[in-house]
Length: 400
Ligand code: FEO
Image (tube, rainbow, N blue to C red):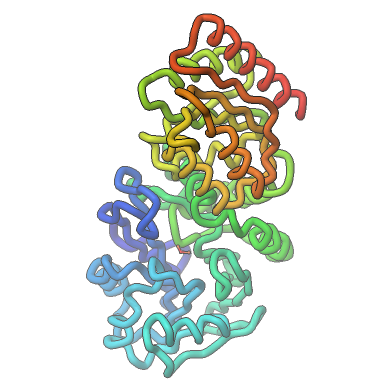
């Protein structure tokens, strides 16, 4: 996609990535893609805010060259060191060795460890400004959104916030780069939530701190480094991020996530009965087969809904491995304070429930009840399962 002028002399020079299948080597984006948004301020001094992943080096330099000679860049502003935003740095250094790299004090240390770069680097302090001629940039320290060195860059006359990971999402751009040009905002909102939970949620406290700090800054355009630029509804994406970050410790949505696995269909049969019971109470429900759904897509439901129903057979005295892997990732991402129910089949001595108690304890998940059965569920078992689902849903609903 060609460069796009956002405001006079300020350009989006980002690139779409539809090649990478796993973001961070972990999270699936083969279907959705991702962008590495970067921005060029073509003033008396020329500055680039954020860069791109190394895979996109040629395309990225073509984007810059549409507006200005790469060799004439004066400043490279690194809001965040993760290589999805800095991978082209060494090549840029070779073409424009005179360009000063600006970042937080921690960025200076990371520049050496990631890229061996030590010279022509300037650490900027929180609130420090940089005049480019007609336009002035201000640097705002926002540590741990997403790494400790992270900052944001603010353009002071048109009130543009280059927020890097914050307010970003998965999803390559489909022609439109602004929210007001996009006919499918739901897709980007959904992918922003998945990105938030996969990448940023663990740092919810710093996210809330950053949003509090930004309340004092008039912002008209949110220009993150992934996903859409929010021009018409800039407050919407801030509010969404705030709500999602508050879920880390506060009340979440009335709803239940069923995460289940089934070896021969017995636990799956019970899952359908439990789901019927939950639905009868009218509580929103999402169902995921842990063996066939990447945890990336399950985490948003776990993060936002207050009830979790774990369906698992006993497998070698423990949880069915795909189910325990989902729960282990939930623990890594600090998905806390859920009400939990458990159902599943076992053949002889059981063990899944004991194992589940151990896994959920550090996450402060409260086990409300369990509904186990041997072998294939009988008609009575299924009726019991339906009642079990309904009473669990009543408990989740009552918390509203
Ligand atoms: Fe988009 Fe934390 O990197």
